[in-house]
Length: 318
Image (cartoon, rainbow, N blue to C red; front, top):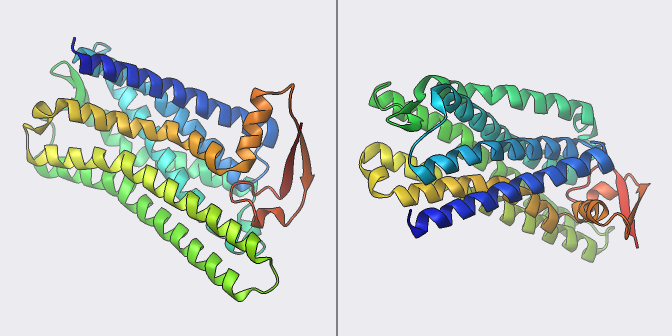
């Protein structure tokens, strides 16, 4: 047992605890304080649920990496990989839909109001969960406890099949969502700036504040998503062409796997840092005796709060 293995075990534990705690806090906040009153919080709830469940498989992966062998049998190997894939893709799909939802909410909330009801958001979320089954079904066939490790069986399928599997999971799980997220937020920023320059009615400082808020959100979401997932897919593509890469860079592979899991615990942190609404939610849950939550509805609030689209102005009173 070397220092790297101990350090990685500690990091896995930290990521798992933070991910479960943070996403559980988001889920409780939405169910208790917001009650999924808006389309946005429906998507955030499903994102937090997928991220939280994504953490469940982390201890199995950590134990395998720590002991360099899989000790839970072939059936559990397939089950863990399938559940891991479902939650991974659902999380990415939810974030992608949220980027489109943000565009509709901030650019023209009245025009898209009929599309952004909680009922429709729940239907879309259910479709996302079902759709995530498509890219992970091959995992039940091609993942097994082969050679003492839970991994893709190298004897199953040809090189072209493995390349095809990796390519379509990369496209569905990273490339396409990344393009949609980037395009949605870039268009949103351009539209907001154009509206600010054309409009003489709204105060300039309010428009600039909203633009700065959205810019921070865009940079944070896109950067965190890219940093956490691109190395994982890049390493897998490299290992496909260089068969000894995994053996030669085992430590690097463990790190990029950990980095991909860390994305699921980063999302609640982004809510806390970028959303005044969720900061108030969290404060109300963590310090119930010091703060009370009062809700005053206002149909225009949505235009000034990028994460609270329920149409309510949420005030925390000391």
